[in-house]
Image (cartoon, rainbow, N blue to C red; front, side):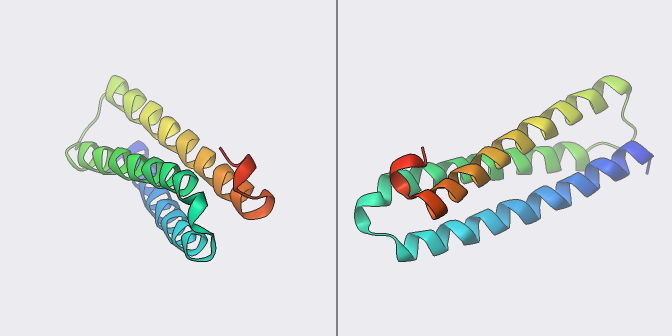
Length: 106
């Protein structure tokens, strides 16, 4: 396995862990928040599901790759950056919801 593939596989594991933690955190928020905050939580849930799909797509692309050329690696790196950006936005939404209340989180 090339060094690039190793680092991408490592990023894939970290992103899976982060998505799983976000899913658990959203479930906890959902249990303790009043029903009227449901739309805000549903939007966050859809965002997490979208990240989950991006992650699955990246996993499939990475698993199908044996020797990548520089263009393929650049494409995967760009996709990982997009996934990371979206995950960070969701973390910020959960933090805002958790610490400031749902009226400021979206």
